[in-house]
Length: 278
Image (cartoon, rainbow, N blue to C red; front, side, top):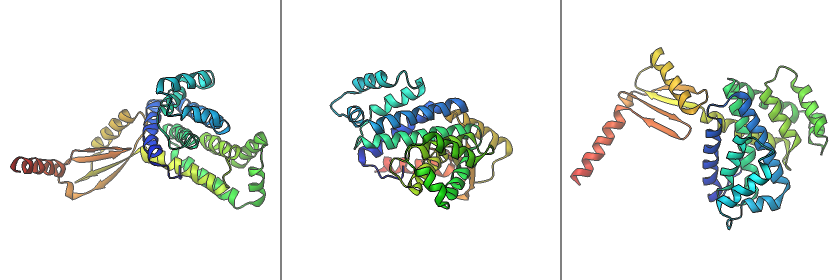
């Protein structure tokens, strides 16, 4: 989230997001949304159970014993995809047990963002969440009603009334989750966290392509198809024309960089020759 994790948690978050990538690869909208709901559920359980959080984060326990613990508690409560992600997360090292709650919330938001992306609605969801935030932040009565403790059903009903029937299903789910579990955050901080996680997922499904010249329609279509096959998700491609690449293309998406430019190959050859002559 916006929280700056310590060294171990920062490194583990990278791996945790890879686990989520694998879980949503090739998933349907419904499957990704169900994964999101399961991850939210696990995060809420851990948020309310300090002993369980500490047990999962206990460095003296090995990965196998943590996997057994996670299975005993959650195997009947969540689906296989979520159980796999949680088991993988439990094997990682975290600077503090409370980091687990924040990370699971981020993964849950990103899973719902993936559901929206599969439905080609991720931009719409980001815009709607921001619009809802402005409406709540600008209304004392609405803010008061939505930060009142308990009354979860009433707050969910209020969100549905606020959004009406025109909002994306993913937007309704995310905002309902947030107003039902502020976790001590202000309205502003809560929406900031959600918007940050949505943007983080969007950045993982946008590919930046650098090319010396514009791609033909056929080249563009083949590239989009190849990236979608690779990620198991729809991918938006942004083209940057850069004469310095000379020829070929470089493609950057998520944490991957595939550099097939002539400039890159020439630089590699130059380094190789320099090494031979050293």
